[in-house]
Image 1 (cartoon, helix red, strand yellow):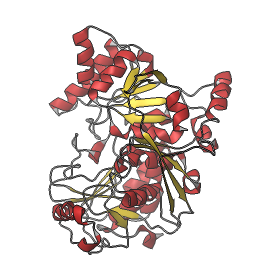
Image 2 (tube, one colour):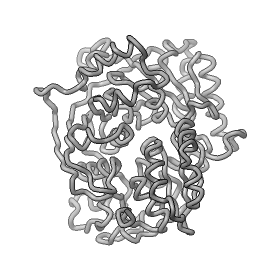
Image 3 (cartoon, rainbow, N blue to C red):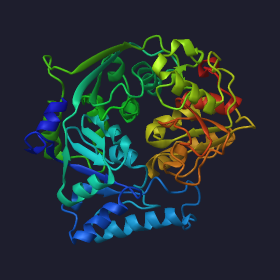
Length: 461
């Protein structure tokens, strides 16, 4: 499948070098685009194909009071500059309070902009999210953003191919987030380096599109260039009727092509891995990279079970988290709970969290940020009464944005505090200087939110 999409987009193959690859969809936000536009200005050129580019602010935006000017000067400047550059270059721009605004990797799929067989790039590593639709999607750097704006092409070396086949039926309380945290705990945070990963198998096929996006979103956390899943009826049903999805005869034509996007039986991969997830539990991380995860009822590994060359970094991670090797994850203190981000900020994630906390009360020691991934998710949550159910349980539905995923806005975890987070990264200081992050699913986050500590969500189900 990867070859089918990649090879059909190669404009030129440089002998002994990278490929010149055509890009169908370019997504931009306020953080990695200003320097790229400045580069165009220095050269006196305009965006080559502005109709292929979509702009929205997400990283720096506040998640409360979005109707008033952004208080932080740097954030306000970046958001204003995105609007200015989009207007100058005639790029569709969904700014704050626009009904289509949101996290770039949430709005692409929900608007039908993300489609099978596309090449999709963005100046953000979690562009891999869009691979859930059978596209080749990957993050790029700012100089590459400028390259795509100027030419609609990018210089890129073709990665190796890996297939991870995941079979089995998930137990109650186990979600797509647990699947990918489990796989990363097995393969490590660098096990996919140099590869583009195809996820296959019955467990993947049984996931909703939201679940598939969660899996592909975190393919980057195993070091992969990206991840994708062959499109099927679940994919087609999700896309059909969305704002920018093909219509009429164009839909029929596209659908016929999309149905060819699968790996042939004799397809050869550079590496194959197989997992059965029938028996896995909800997962949670204990360290400072996404590969440092264990099942919720498990314990942090003992130092002598860690490979000798990795023991120093393992010990450093535990010292940062103030955890002890061999200790249980159950009962660990929690101060903050964050539900949102391009990993788990979709309507399905908000439903899972809300259904769990309904009829219960938020623990007094918990500060909770429940953040929809887009205006459309927020609108749907309100229409479904999710906001009211959250309020009854002591929570507040905030406004869309990247929020506490990366601490580039006002939503920062204070130093020394512990967060159960549904986002994708738990690096040192990722959610705020000196913060401690434990990655988990919305269900596990909900259980922490009502108890004030790490607990097994299945105990309440």
